Image (cartoon, rainbow, N blue to C red; front, side, top):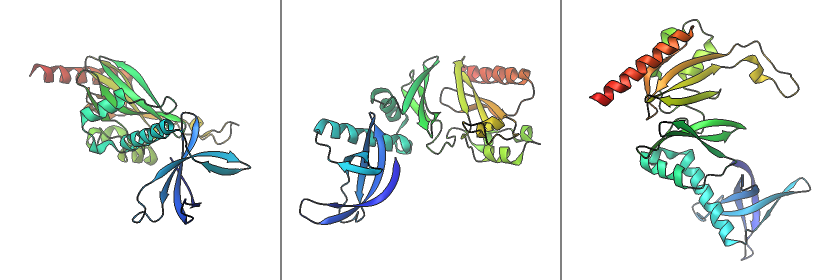
Length: 261
């Protein structure tokens, strides 16, 4: 949702009230959430349709009750997914599996072994936000709405392997920032490789006309997670693919030993 200006609306009783506005798109239509500036006095928010007319935003009533309810359900869904910390693992699973997620905003991809990931369109980029375990009927927030990793901590990073990297890249890792391309790969033997880019290739900054490109080199660190999204081996910057193979072998061994206990 996008916060916009404060508007004044004449109410049925003739009074004029000020409302904070949040614009959003749902089912290819524009809507506006209006919240009274005097929240204590008028706590009830409501929705209107929004459209452009002569470079201005025109607000009109939503007269279809079913449409209005769909909008309410969508906004409640977005609120839950934007801040799912109050949801239990199974509650989040049920929300992601059985609610109608808008296809223009969310997409689900299979990761094998009963695992899946729900990506969300954030700033015109698809971001892998939620990890789903269909076997246990659980789900976890892998990345929050601000593109910070949730199941990974600073303790899950091999900091020695980052020695000598540009300070900005190291800072990205310290911040657990996944603003650059970060992907969970397919699961195999209970683990999945995660590639976490902490510095992009200079072309990342290039606009459609070819301007803005820098001389940055892509820097990606790698780790392996289990079927709860938790790191099994520490994330590290690798120099040879053999290191990645060794990390996978170690991660698979650890997960196998856990199952045998």
